[in-house]
Structure formats: C-alpha cells, structure tokens
Image 1 (cartoon, rainbow, N blue to C red):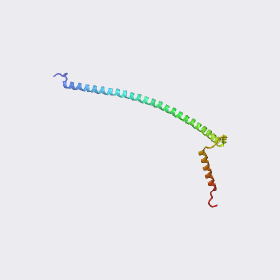
Image 2: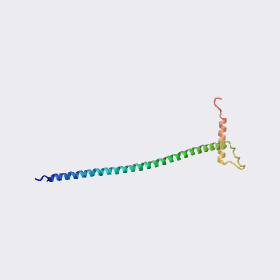
Image 3: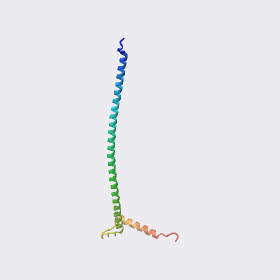
Image 4: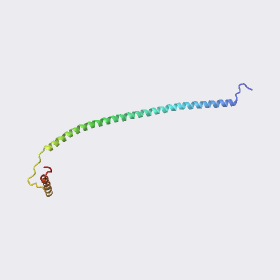
Length: 132
C-alpha cells in the first residue's frame, strides 16, 4: 500500500465538508450584508418620517398661531361691536318718535285693535279691587 494514497471516501468527505463550510460562510456573509442593507433602508425611512413629522409639526404650529391671532382679533372686534350696539340701544331708547304726517289715519283693523285695547284698559280700571 502506498503511504501517500488517500482514501477516496475521505477525499469525498473532505470535499463535502469544505463545500458545506464555504456555503455556510457565504450564507453568513450574505446575511450580514443584507442585514446592513436593511438597517440602512430602515434608517433612511426613519429619517424621512422624522423630517415629514417635523414639517407637519411646524405647519401645525403656524396654523395654531394663526388661529390664536384670529381669535384675539375676533375678541377685540366683538368688544368693539358690543360697545357700538350699546350706544345704538341708548340712542334708540332716547330717540323721540318722528311726528306723523298730517294725513295719517289708522286703518280699520288698527282702529278696532286700539278700541278693544282701550275698552279692556278702561274695564280693568273700573273693576273694584277686592278688600277695599
């Protein structure tokens, strides 16, 4: 027997082992590379979401400030309008009625209503008060 002769089964086993180790090492390296790519994509997405959220927050702050300014202006306008309304009410309460034109005459319905109201007032005045 030749001392340098190698058993073919041992050679086949060593080749299969080397192939398996090479495949496993390649698989592991590919996994590391893909995990790094996935982590980079996740970082890019997180950065984009952060930027979009910051833009939305800035828009919200601007809108809230505009609403607050509009509410303050509306409150000032409301106070001014209420003051004007009070002045109009005072002027209306103190205003003298306009004189009627000389040819103004009440219509038949209004004359009947005035007559009924006058009669009811006179009847209330003429009624005896109990206990006197």
